[in-house]
Amino acid sequence: MEPEAAGATEQNVVVGRQRNLLTEDLDLPEHVREGVQQLSDSLCAAVERLATDLYESECHFLYELVQNAEDAHARARPEDSEEPCLTLRLGAPCSSFLHGYFSSESNEAGFTEGDVTALCGISVSSNMGRKGIGFKSVFAVSDRAHVLSKGFTFVFDVQGPLGKLGYVTPTWLDGAELSTLPAQVRRSHSEGKTVFFLPLRRAGLASAISQEMNELASGGRASLLFLRRLRCIELLDQLASAPRRLQRTGDTSTASQTADPLRSCSVILEQQQEPGKVQRQEHRYMVYRHLAAVESEAVQSMHVELVLAFPMPSSEEEPETFSRCEPLFRFLPIRMVGYGFALHCDCFDLVANRSDLRRGSLPNRVVRDSLPQAFVRACQASPHISRRALALLGEPVADPFWKVARECILEQLSDVSCSSAREEQDLPRLRLGQRTQLLNNVRSLLSELQCEGPAASGEHGLRGPTH
Image 1 (cartoon, rainbow, N blue to C red):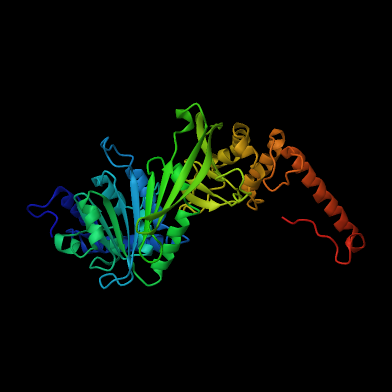
Image 2 (cartoon, rainbow, N blue to C red):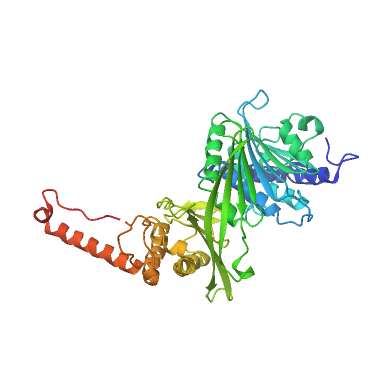
């Protein structure tokens, strides 16, 4: 279908305009056309490199689609709209899609011309990430990325006639092509949802995506505490797992919107075991919000908000089973550091592939240096947190950037009463400062014994803890 043909829709014209930017046969001198072609080839090679090599995991695209849905829900929606929800679907292999497929389906307001332009670019974006390259991550798993949103229906096809230009050039999908898509995908689009549909390019990808969906349901579920609009994520894995639904409950207002920086929130995981039977697990968190001032000659006076989410046991009788590590977040998981609580800040300055923070960045240093005070105030605000402070502080941190913060937390907690959940009931409670001093004394004794050699500690000597 020619995008400028009579009867073409406004959306069709928008897609055609983007297509013509790189494919229109301009009346130019030969040497100029050759130069344009070389630039086009270089652009396509760079985009291909971004799509395949930028991210550590080929399944990273899943988080980019979650972020896209979160951003899209920022637009005004009717008051009677359904609760913002995203469905992530992994389809089994079939005759039409030999390696299976993946789709995301969001009940957002729908695409605009700006969104189409953003998907075609690599440096500017309305939704798909600050650097405008997040969407290209879908090409790590698919050669044909379909976009269906209200009147927009198009595909980025790198296996079609455009070749690598398909990374940045949309092709309109007509009715006949839409009819070949899975029935559930077409149904979601007809219901007004925005759908990204990705036929998987090779065997083995479905298994990797299934594992990443499991990770999102477990280690990444705290994302729902930090996403401001999305309150529900459905995970439909047709390969193995039963349908799962992650649902956030509780108030998530920012610290500037409420006088109480501490609140209780939960992420509910519902999993359908069999028809009519649903298993429900509640994962509770105490969420503390802390405003930190930024003092620098480079910027005007401003504040950044740290959000600390402390996992809580379901009952006071449970043992200390909540000492697991939680990631750093900028809405979505970034990386593990070793802390037993989740730390989110929307001003974290990330490297391009979102795998880590920029160590020299002022906002990142402000967050790190403000963390000890935030942790201590959270302990002072809640006995549930202070009682488990040591466990929630997590494992010894190897990363020098974050190790400093952990050591400062231990120093500042000297006046916060807490005790380990593993302590025997007949042992007296110690303040954390006393416990830290006791631990330091033990380490010092071990070091002295080690220096005295085997004679003081047995045939093989006694080795103190290493870090």
